Image 1 (cartoon, rainbow, N blue to C red):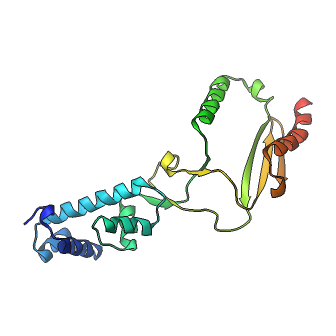
Image 2 (cartoon, rainbow, N blue to C red; image 1 turned 120 degrees about the horizontal axis):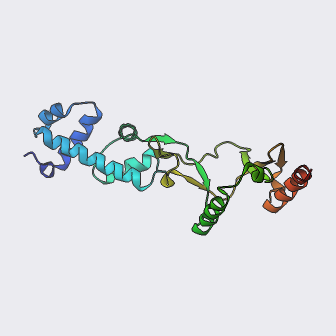
Image 3 (cartoon, rainbow, N blue to C red; image 1 turned 120 degrees about the vertical axis):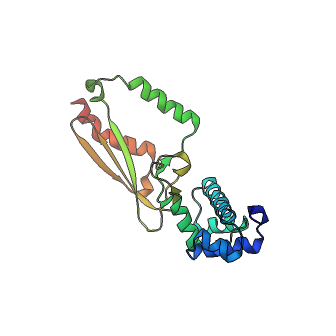
Length: 209
């Protein structure tokens, strides 16, 4: 006996349990009567399986990961799953939020940026820049967390798309090269066209002076 395929289901379960208890591979192999290389291969195979489960959907909870890992044949606890995923370099973070854009919208943004890449400071000084941010009026709106490694903050599979907003207050702002304006819009009045009309009514007189 020595190959991973030769290990019985009971032996594999014992290996996983002893590993959780902090036993070394040598101690585990002596305990169940198999080679150390067989123990090592079994543990590596389990880690590869867990990594595939994490990569399939970065927004799964520790409970979700444990369930799928158990279904693959690895008996373990949520605490062990969390620790093993951390050892692989993943951290449980609040996902970066980005607008949900289709391919046509992305292309239009790229085209706009390309056309303006050589604009001068004088040209940009005539532009009204505006943006808006949502401030939630209740707790518990962060949603699911995401498993990601260092440097993966902007990776598409780690981003959370935003479409509609929960109960909140929208704060819109605009600025030119010499001044800025801030506008709080109550939820009943949240409307893209209305917001722009209000911002322009405030900002255009400054722009034209």
